[in-house]
Length: 492
Image (tube, rainbow, N blue to C red):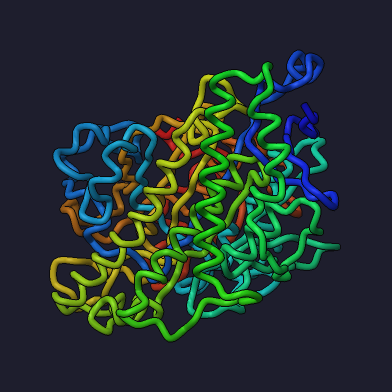
């Protein structure tokens, strides 16, 4: 058998012209030295940004009296105790994911003048209006950049995937680095076809540039694939894993070739009801490529800006995502909830795809060693005139949901409400005063072992901006700040 190329416990099939195809790890074909050498667990971090706030139907239908006190400012309930679906937006597909979820409520962004904008999602900084810093706060790189250092310690294969799915093909990512003290916003791919080429054609230099892909990649390595599959050393589990990968990558690339014209780099903007299925296919393929990249260890860190917005207008009775997010009309409130459920179903399918056995972490699933963080740029839908709903269409009550359990850090399967005694109403709809969004980010970094000495800057305690002056709803005097280095209470 022609040997599999193995580097840093990553394996590749070879084809003509030096072509290399990443494949999932096949432990039975590792050399004795590679199998015997100690290997740390492979962890991963995925962030998913949703925009324009969340409808009330996003949240489980709970009253404060349903919750049990976990800490002075943390009250929760096990998700398994919620009857029926978790909520309208977290429908049936999420029932099998409950024990790997954490839903966090009463989380407030404190960035100066923060409202719409992706810049704060992984920074807790309003770089949209203050590109370098905010008052006395220094510029912070986004948390993914510090987590990557932990994910790829002494590993030359470090590779991040930033991808955006929106009405604009020119939008950058929400990932920020610091280069010689200057802030740099990283670019993003804008369709899964480009990602597939760059992440699986290993002979091609990493780039943001579309390359031609006339042949199915599995055909390019078919001779080596058959040789490996028929090897007497390969275990039954590894043979099954290889077959499943071949089928998955074949179907994914076939759909990509059908969905994207040759040399196309952008998503068409003239979406109609007639080709809406194509739009859904493209979103599905985005998540499929993300899943494959994780399974083949081509990346351990992904940021997805998931915001079709105007592209889905014709499907939802001519309504567009941002437009209905500001409405208090009953019909558009329902449409906004339908839009969120539609988006969430794609995310659920992605999460389920990570529940298979993880050969890089024997005895666990991919999801168990991955943290998926889904958040939003702002809080709830609507405006102040909406009846029965505080409608905080700013960074108050920002939706934050975690999936997976990297390093077994989290107490998963919980809904936790972080409102404090400054919250004046205890019904389902309330103006929340709780914990800062900054603390969600520092908790995530702590789960990956990033010390506070790495994320604090210029001697300023904490991470990000704690100004909290927008509409006086997240003022530091009323927020639960506590020790800015501590993780969220009741979460681990």
